[in-house]
Image 1 (tube, rainbow, N blue to C red):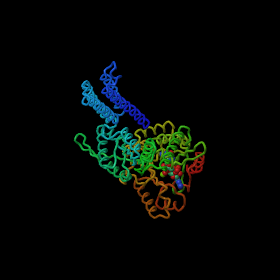
Image 2 (image 1 turned 60 degrees about the vertical axis):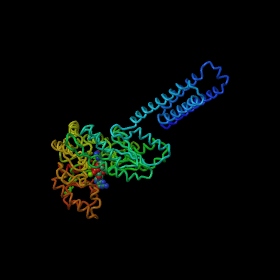
Image 3 (image 1 turned 90 degrees about the vertical axis):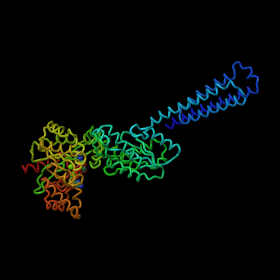
Image 4 (image 1 turned 90 degrees about the horizontal axis):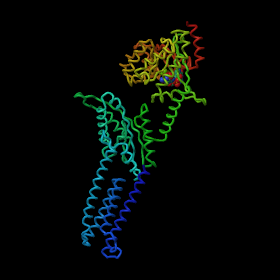
Length: 555
Ligand code: C2E
Ligand code: MG
Ligand code: MG
């Protein structure tokens, strides 16, 4: 772009210099004519004819300058034509050379046509850099303003706002109402900015803001989010409807320190995407650490895809025991990633990354298929005295065709469905609660058990929790980590076990590592435990061995 601007400036310079040279030449011819120099007197073509042709050349250059850059080109063109006019006026009024009068009018017409041409260019240019829906500048406008600021060595901050909820509004209400929402957001952004910056709409759901130097970008971002997330009421067929939108913001501070516009835009994108994928941060300021985290996330994302293709994932199974009598009840399937060089990547790192994109859906399916295949023989051998639990992500369980797909996989694998338990996290119910509830009901009606993982993590209201149709709840290990030293945790676990029983569920407590924890869980009437004390996640071979040890005795 900068290259382009430079070459345009060069062309304008050449054309303007040519014009001045031509006009000077005509002035010189005029002087020679007044002096009645011999060479002028002997010319076969009349001087007025030569001047007319040269003026046409000046006019042609003026058109080219206006086309090249209508803003600077128009000014240079007007300057050239006014110079010509002055020269012709001098001939008419100074030298009483009345043959130049038609040339004088000609120049006026040329001036008028350049002004009209320039106006048309301005209208076209405004259309090119303006967003049709909101009337704000669009991506081209934004990049042009920013590169001009960089050229002028100005400083400030860039904010990229990503709006969430517009796609859904387009689906639910139609595109016209979606556009209305975008318009309202644009107005709200401008009302927050006042004179502190300029807003642009750079894509369907993204706005960019150039903040003036000295304005605090974090404070403005907070105000912007507050304003954007306020209720929006739009009227559809005379009925008011409440709409809510969310936003995340990526910030690049001190853009003037950067060499080129591409780097600034890339940093703003990185910061905005980081905020979009973050669970708790809605505003992200670009810095080296953010960049490193994004690089790592991208690397893990690539590795997940590669691992799915090349089968670098393997499964481990962690036993679950009835707390009374240490009776083996089943296993939780836990996914592991091992790269060809032996590096192990923890699920605590790769699962949240997979969950922040749609790869988790493929990963869930991969684990279900593999686990059913590996466990089928054990289930056939021990019947429903053994349960295989498989984790399914919030995104996976919210898919409308999830139950059908799962039942199809179970059928294909010839797996006894009464041996299968699906673990969903409490968080699953916060995103698309109605579809998730529907899917849970379908699975339950088809004989698949359901457990609620991370129970008590606080994503669901108590009223909603009491009506979730699951038969088992799991209390996370973080709850019992300090249970013997922390009275609050102790009371919390006791209450959650009580609540679980109110919901007519069995309660599994995860992460039990020692007898102190075990004793407390038993005192609180917990039903099952899953923890390192009685069994770590282990290979399929060890799992088969454990089954033969425990289940033969219990058969
Ligand atoms: P989760 O489903 O709550 O699984 C229990 C986690 O607690 C496992 O960690 C397990 O190894 C760990 N754990 C169990 N008992 C103890 C203990 O006594 N002490 C300690 N320190 N840890 C214990 P892991 O395997 O690292 O998995 C972490 C999370 O990753 C899981 O939490 C689950 O949310 C997710 N995950 C693992 N595999 C899958 C999968 O196949 N699909 C999906 N969607 N998520 C998975
Ligand atoms: Mg789990
Ligand atoms: Mg858990």
